[in-house]
Length: 400
Image (cartoon, rainbow, N blue to C red; front, side, top):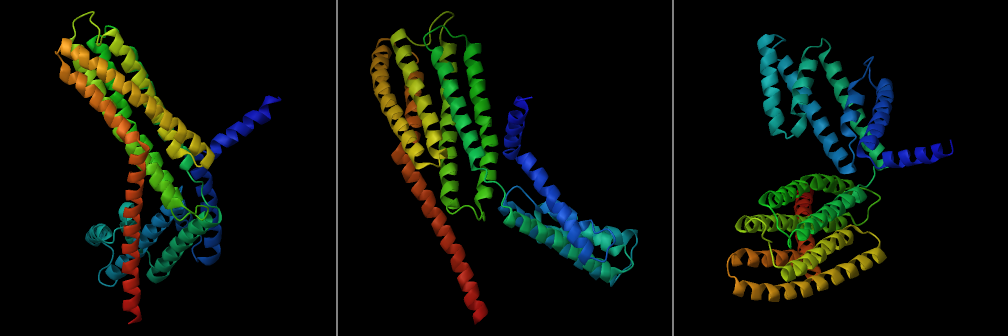
């Protein structure tokens, strides 16, 4: 019994960090509130359009809520206008119904309501089939506006969570998986490695490459949660730090896949029971890949850390791992050069392995990252100035 409160607290904390749980609770409350408001303002006995709109509008982030509400209201208004226009010319019949559905779907594409294209046709059909056209049309627009307004106010008063920590955990998990793969690869460099086992490592690298899509989805959610969020003062910088960090790790993962491909080709060249590398080369490569994996983890921690002191510690660890990796790389290059001169077969694969390690170390370099981040900041500032210049020109035109 003593463990029950602790277990319940743990469950609540997990639920508070789960997007599905948060979205379910927020959408339920917003839909209920919008229905309560619509029953007082609308003449409909059951104004279900309002809670339906709130259910669709209240998204996980403020940005997606605003975007969805605009598209939803736009689709309903366009559908109502189409129904009013058709009712003035034709009545309701099988051919007029087909014609209004066709016109609604086509016009919905042009007004760019995206996923609410079907809503344009639905609104037009519902309004066209009622007897009190003007009253029903006004009620449907009113209920949609109520649902959208309640959804927006709900997200503004009770700001949704910022999913930066969740995205950061996904990025760190990706780096740790890459590090573990490098360690698994390094353990087989000094022993006889069948082609099937080397191919299995290649498949693991490909699965790791595919996992980037899941991390990218989590990062897009985090980026949306930073837009228009009143609790965030430096959302642009946080978005760019995470995005450039993921881009760097994505390049590193692709290079690891190429590395696994080279080792698989090398295993095909070796005979049964023959090692991939001589013992002295294998030991150096094992140490080198261990430092490369540690550098990737330290890099992921650096780009996902919000506290300055922790970021300084992560930067120090990354600097130490990169320095140790470069030292090991030079030692391996010297030993590998001597071995290649003695046995020049498959020298292309040996050289490609060092080239791939160099690419990863260059991507993780702090100067390279700072330069990349500054380029993205400059590009974002230029885009922002262009948007504001267009708005300024529009204001000057309106003012005459």
